[in-house]
Length: 115
Length: 113
Image (tube, rainbow over all chains, first blue to last red; front, side, top):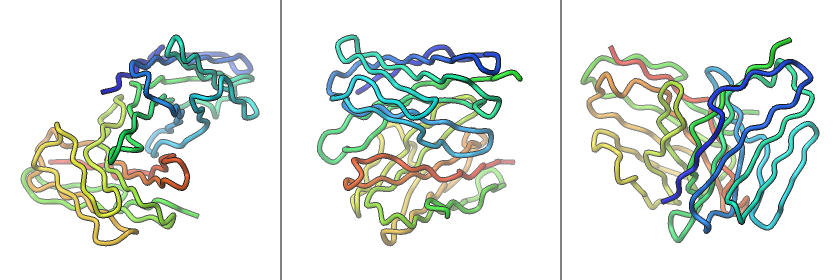
């Protein structure tokens, strides 16, 4: 099966600075890479995703990059705000047959943005 | 508007006393998932339903069962909860129409006393 590694496990930044979270995956068959934000006591919320036919995707202050050759993808948050503080999970989709849609998660990054 | 709803949000049960957690969805998605998430860990997939087809993960204990009586509802049954089953239980849904992007509910926090 797929193995997703995520770094760092914790990240502290000053408000207004950028934050970068990196993930690697093991299975070259993976073709969908979502990022989830999980606030305390809530379920994960999809914030951005990227598919293997795209190298970069942006949505306002958030961007994701994908390097298929290196099996590496990253989340970039610019102009961070205190409300960006949360746990961020990367994931990779490995789907064949009836298991289509199965996500493999990284271990999460606790992002803290200090005002 | 809530799309994936979980009830209750907090559940306390006694060691060994069966408990059922509920999930419903208004998205008409054909796939529903149950995840277990322990503190400071990633969600761990327990099983999923693809339409009516049940798919159990190999390492999911027999103590965990699931039912999906219709498209909208899915239940997680824990037959004899142990202290190690205390966790957040997350329900998610996806659809082939939306390339199986997963939408999560808010979770049910289970405490075992």
